[in-house]
Structures are given as structure tokens and as C-alpha cells.
Image 1 (tube, rainbow, N blue to C red):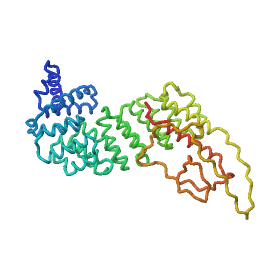
Image 2 (cartoon, rainbow, N blue to C red):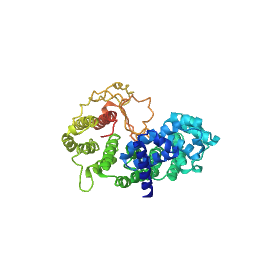
Image 3 (cartoon, helix red, strand yellow):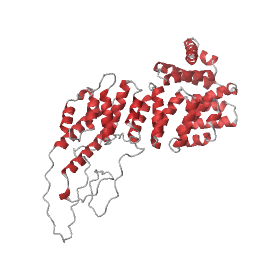
Length: 455
């Protein structure tokens, strides 16, 4: 309550200043550190879900930028103003303003080295930024500056040193709980935990984020990382844990999350996860089911599109209202219906086998025709479509090394490493295997067509 009252008083002061006939009054009467502190308070409210404060953030950034451009060496003799300059830069400020203000500031070499690292970071020079900031320990700095610096260093090291990055993000959360810094640190921790294959950390960071920042304007980025993490770590995260995390969401967000997981899982061939997520999406909450939601119907159908209940699936697909689907999902519906049709279609006639004499050396098998540039349905790959499969850890096993003594196989066919070795003879071809291979190609086509998440 005390913090909220302070925020309201400071925002009220700024509103009075901006409403005054003198446009420069706020900049003339407030020190840079006061403006930056007000900016932080507004950003913390936004992170907590107060979207109405976003126009004030834009105004505060404008006012702070003008004040810092006008600041002189005398202003920066106050350490609070110099720290505020760096925090402003790391809060989304103008890098040109930061660089110009630093050039006018007379500060000690350690502060100037830190400023150089921040400027390099803002200007997209991560290598130089890492080198400049490497010797600086955020835990030895004043809390507001240390928290932002830990966040920046953690972000810079996320790719090359993920373990160190997670430690720095933990420090950022420790130094600045309940703030935009913590929101960003949790959000980034989720993604790094996925790349590390750390299911426990992924679940913990996701739980904390949903508890505290579900209504942040940046929550959509968390949702992207969360869905990708569930897919990538599906063998390590129980369905009960997943349900615990989503139960803290409001019903609509929970439904959308499960819809996205169901679609990704269906495309990647994770039938159990897809069926679970589809069922949860349809189930709804508080007696309000989503069984009439065309997306829930579509994604639940995908998880059983090659099952023994295919006729039921075809009937279910036929009842879906296409007009309520996005363009991407209409393409998915078309592909799913095509797959269902292929599954129930009678297999093509097999060629009559010509048995060879037992002692004779078998003649070479005819080479299988090279893969066409179009798929089984005659559709070319969709140019520019982005697969939703996470690039960090392939889920499918890599195909075995080619056997030079066996005839070439269709390049579009990918077999799991656990598949038994079978002679590549025409008269041993199983019609069911052929149908499933064709189905897998259709699913690959679906993956190409679906780059965007359901709206």
C-alpha cells in the first residue's frame, strides 16, 4: 500500500507538471533520478497488469530523455543522477542520449566502464558489452542499478553461457522483486531452462511467472516459451504439474494455452500429450465447456486422425465451422481431412511377386523414383512458413546412417531409430506401413503450413 501511494503521488506530480503551460517545467524542476524513479514505478505497474499506465510510460520516457539531454557535468556530480542515466538506458531509453550524456559526465573509471558496457549493449554490440561488464558484480551495486545490470548480463550470456545467465537472472530477481526487472528475468529464465533441458527450473519459473505476471503486456512472450518448453520437455514434465501451472490462469488463457499445446503435440506426433491438452481445452472450467470451440474440435481430432476411430474423426471434422477458424487453421482442417481420407482409402494393388531360384544371386532391385518437389497431395512446400518445432532439442530420433548395400529410400520418409530393419523388397511392402508413411508426409506438410499460433 505504501508503495502504491508513493507511485500515485509521483504520477500526480508529473501530471501536474505536464499540464502546466510551461512545457519545460517538469524537466527544470525534477532531477534525472526523480524522473527515472517515476519511470520505474510506472513500468512496475505495467508489469503487474496495469495496461492503462502505458501512455504514462511513453510520456515519462520522453520527459526523461529531454532532461538527460539537457543535463550537464554538474548534474552528474550527484551519483544518483549518473546511476539513473544507466538505468534509463537499460529501461528502454534512447542510446544516443545515453552516449551523449556519458560523454559530459565526470565519473570514476569503474562507472565509465560500466557505462561503456551499457552503451555497447544498447547499440547491438554484445561481444564488447560482455567484455566491459564482465568484471562488474551486480550484487555489489546499489539495488536499482544492480538489478538492471544483472538482467542485462544474464541476457547477454544466455546463448553461450546459459548456466551463468541463469545465476545472473536469479540475482536480478533477488535485487528487484515485484518489478519489471523480475518479470523480464523470469520470462527469460523460462526460455533458458528449456535450452538446458532443466524441467524442474522450467516448471518453477513458469509457476512464479503465472502467479505474479500473467497480465503483463509481455505475457505473450512467456506463453510462446511455455508452449515450446512443454513440447521440448514433455518426457520430463508430468501432466499433473502442467495442470497445476495452468490452473492458476484464468479460464480463457488456460484454454488457449492447451489449444496451442494440443496443436504442436499433434504435429510432432505426441499423441498422449495432444490428447491430454485437447481434452483439457474442451473440458473448460466451472461448468463452461469448450466443446463447441472449432479449434478444440480440430486439435483433438488431430491426435486421433490415424486411429481406429477414424470414421468418428471424419464426422467430427465435418462438423467444424470453417468460418470461425483462422486461415492457418483452415489449411490445417483441409490437411486433416485429406489425411483421414487417405487412411480409409483402399490400398493400391501390389505387384505380383516373382520368386527367384534359391541358389541364384538376386538381381538388383529397381531404384525408387527420386522424391518429387511436391508432396503426395501435389502441394509444393509453403515458402516462408516457419515450423513450430523447437530448434533447441530435436524430438524425433535422427535416422540411421545409410546402408550402401540397400536401395535408396524416399528422401521424404523419416523412420525412428527404433524401427526394425526390413528388406527393401517390393513383395515385403506392407500396405499399412505405406499408408502411415504417407500420413507422416501429410503431417510434415501441416507443420510447414502452420507457423503462427492460433489466434
